[in-house]
Image 1 (cartoon, helix red, strand yellow):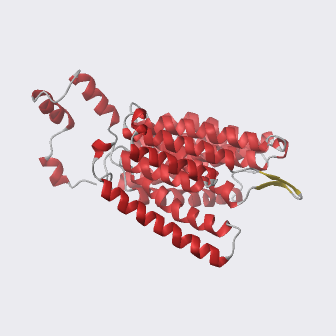
Image 2 (image 1 turned 45 degrees about the vertical axis):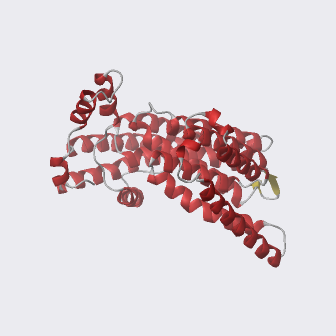
Image 3 (image 1 turned 60 degrees about the horizontal axis):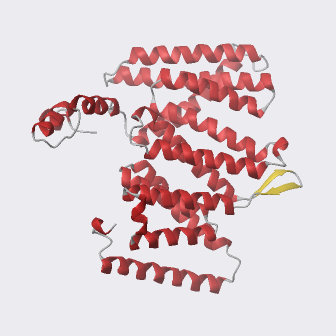
Length: 372
């Protein structure tokens, strides 16, 4: 967060834009640019790691609170209507507490915010559980989570709640696709369609410049869901029930991610025609080789690193930085060769990367943007 003394010395966004306009450094309507800047601004929030801790704490607290209500016989888990009504009631209380909390950062606001978050987590859990019991279907849980997320996203303006609610919907869809018995004959097709839809929506949310900050939690939810989908696919390609095991080939997801990686490279370059330049042609060639090796996790990690660096999004860079070493270890571990051969392969891979590094520096491609 920015120090208050710095804020007093720094010009406002409107003042900065006006000064740039006076110096003829802005082309177009100044009023539209001010309106766009205003829409992109958001209220200051706590650091990301604190918000994550609050989210985990609220999740635990909500289950403890539900347990208390059950033991005290305020709610009955076998009554679907009662669970839904309690869920709506708690969600309404959470929205009211959020409005009462206001924007002033003090102890009262912090207490009300956390109480509101716990109430919302409790309400959503009760609502989804009630609908799931009533429908007696895993897809009923997904539908309930989707409905309450669509209703709560514009009303409950807390980024961590928006992220978690959106991610829960996507995660429940993934779970249903991978382990629902009725999808046995089309499981691989359903997974590939789900992954492709996620990639398209994430590309729009992360790369389209006119998307408002309002949708940032949703974009992170899609990015994290894609990571979970790929990690689940890498962890085991066997899904199904008992001895009825099915296999999902990693080739098609790898090809989709290769196309995404090439698209991201072209987007970062600013023009897809620049892919004809030598450094970007080498990057595209390396992407195709990774696709042929069917290593979707490594490709996804590179995509996240490029997007995070280009957009100055630390969350995406951290996700990519954590995903890359794990996927490299899994890739080398799963290669069906001897330990000595793996050692030789690792040494050769390291030497190849070092040669590539020095070649990039020799050509000046690591610092001269005009080459692209």
